[in-house]
Length: 307
Length: 182
Image (cartoon, rainbow over all chains, first blue to last red; front, side, top):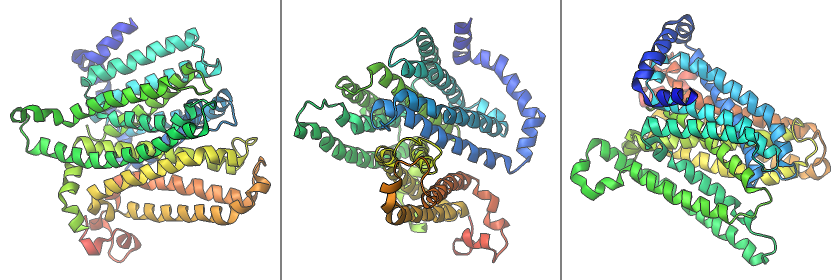
């Protein structure tokens, strides 16, 4: 039943127009939406609350998950840190949902027609389920996957990836490749911690010596790449005829982004395989996935303004 | 600003569908990293969080992340400004945001050069001295204000030059006379 609902929800335009659209139209014409639209201060106020909640969410997630991955506060155990951050995380999620509803009431039909809105909803659902079932359980149990953790993992991953792929034909996943780039930076930053202490000091320092220049290089490439891609993107929409370009069509930003995803995913995997950090691999996996899900929600939210 | 606004790369950047929004989203993500971590450090200095953990242990592990976040925030912010220089330069909230950022940086310098000298004596105290708590309060307030002002830049039309009375403070902050309004 749930499976069928998810399939229809993510893939069928008829299901959306028959069941969801009337609901959105009713909300759009209701008193709450009218009040928000007429009160000029409501949307900016909700926008500010949304961003502050996002900042607290970032703090809580980064504190808990980076502790597990490597560069967090090691004076406290991952389980204890996770427990301490939980109230911040819960408050931030409540603030996000509350302010998000206020923001949404101001433009109900626009968000209904916005793919990133549905991506954000799928991401938010997945992130909440994953964080409060899988991640919490795995960190609490020192890396062991209980039944609750496995069910949470299955549900969240199914909803997240299916919705994202089904709704966007991979386009959105490709376009957020720079998120993976940031994970590469985290990987490089944490790489020195993965080297066993038994290895001699000069060798142990080598990854840091390598990773810092590489990080700088990546930032320079990111900035220059942004300008280059902007130029291509601008020309693509205004001047270029992709059919006439032949092989040049491969330089379309989405394709470049897909290539980047493959490359970076490979590098991150390589770093992960060599990891000998103190925390079990299962814990590191759920923490990286938790950061990925929450940051994906933030990106999708920003994209609502453009698409 | 008019010269900057007319640069081909600036035009390409603001007219691009993929890259402009990607940089904006990156700005938000780095904000989560920077503000998120600095809030946690400030909460420790306020004596609210991690009371049994030495402040230096928190700073040692979190401040590198905060600095990385700040560097990325500045880089993405500069790119965003380069893409729409007139829009931001003319925006009252943008100008206020820069002022508050400058105040927050001064606050950091005061902490570093004045308050932090005696940190050894209160490093592991659950509740740091009043001077450190005041600095932390100013820090947390100013960065949250930066977030709020940053968000309000998008609603700059509240104080559109055409609707602001000439000679008022808002008129001055919006730089209406020089550029003839938005």
